[in-house]
Image (tube, rainbow, N blue to C red; front, side, top):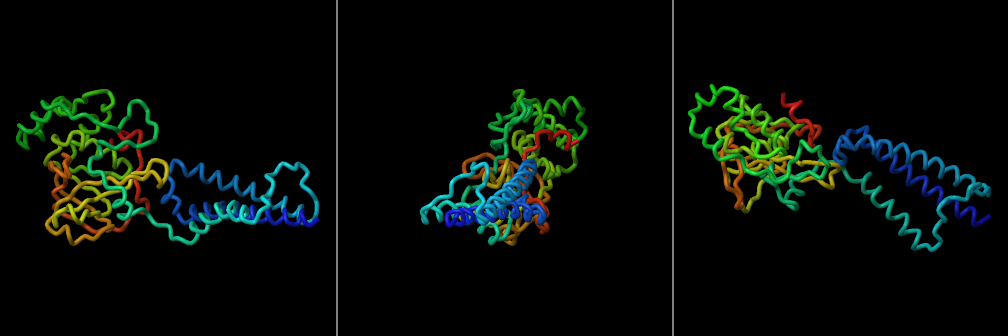
Length: 321
């Protein structure tokens, strides 16, 4: 009987741990904080896991009560309870500790502290999101567009560029290979706009297009939002980075990407402040890399968005149109 009582304590503890994890997921969902840890496309699986954990917890509770009343579980199919005290602490501590951390620490978005640890990528066209992609959509290692296309745009006055026929614009964005066809099509659409609005839904896709064809977009007006990041020992007083965290599956694979911004009073904007930047696209050279920058004409402080991260989009053209 004494052994049955000890076994019931293990079942009760397992019940509490399982209910704790299930409840934590529910709390994150209700408070809209789950997005700080999991990409939207993965949330459904986490919510299903919460239901499964709850069902298993109910079964563990049933086993605990039967053991406490001295009635053995009929199937005898459960994992035997560990006997040594230290083994008990180690086994349950591995589950209880992260659960306590989750409940005790505040749920906040990733910020510049992680950027300082990982380093920020100012060349979106070299990003390599880990999610599998359809064959028609690929981000890594883009080659440069043809020099003839760059020269064509640079040699034309602004008025002539605005009046270019459709076929001439498409010639500017000829894709060097089939993997970049979608970005070439996006380039045509973005080029026709008076102002390029970097939408959060296709944030990486737009920046990748501009980075791939940056010489063609020189002088175009652009608007984007993000948090402020600054490398104090490398950037000048009039420079800052406006960035976002790109997440593929969860916050563990989050990578910071941003755009270099130059503005006379850039030093007035502290780290992690969310801003909206309006300016023109220009070429730049930073840390040995050729990138594009924004010569800002206006920087506005804004509230942090409810969904601060950006995610890969496999059909960017449907949103851009």
